[in-house]
Image 1 (cartoon, rainbow, N blue to C red):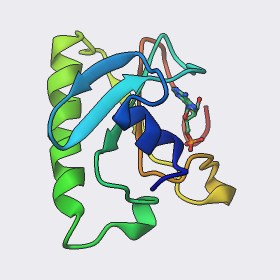
Image 2: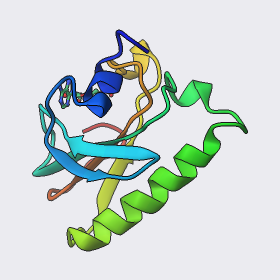
Image 3: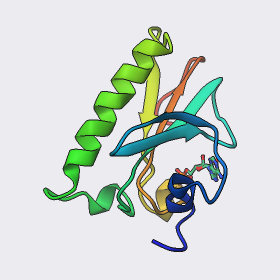
Image 4: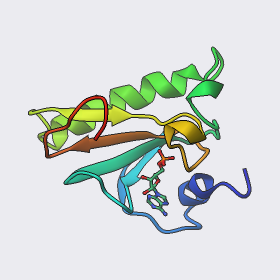
Amino acid sequence: MEDCLFCKIIKGEIPSSKVYEDDMCYAFNDIDPKAPTHFLVIPKEHIPSAAAITPENSVYVAHIFEVIAKLAKEKGMDKGFRVVSNCGESAGQSVFHLHFHVMSGRDFTWPAG
Ligand code: AMP
């Protein structure tokens, strides 16, 4: 997607603070962190949101969760972490390229904050 911010980040057209990369996904620190550790993991294929996950592209989601588990171990996030994917404007999605927020380093409340 030519005008997608996260597609541009994947292509290196917009700078980002890389956390991890492989052939299927890219992880980078959130520019406006909501926790001491806050990074985003995105598929390299443009999928607009969680509402657009299909049998054809769900392999990216499975892979991303494997990567999240690996990064959580490597980063010592053993006290716990939160994974969030906002889907749709009313849920707070502001970038329409599927992404998983991974946050750690503080206590979280539920359902908000
Ligand atoms: P959401 O609001 O759930 O769609 O999440 C989008 C996230 O992308 C927000 O937490 C933003 O802070 C983050 N974000 C926006 N632009 C950038 C950027 N250039 N680099 C890193 N994170 C970004």
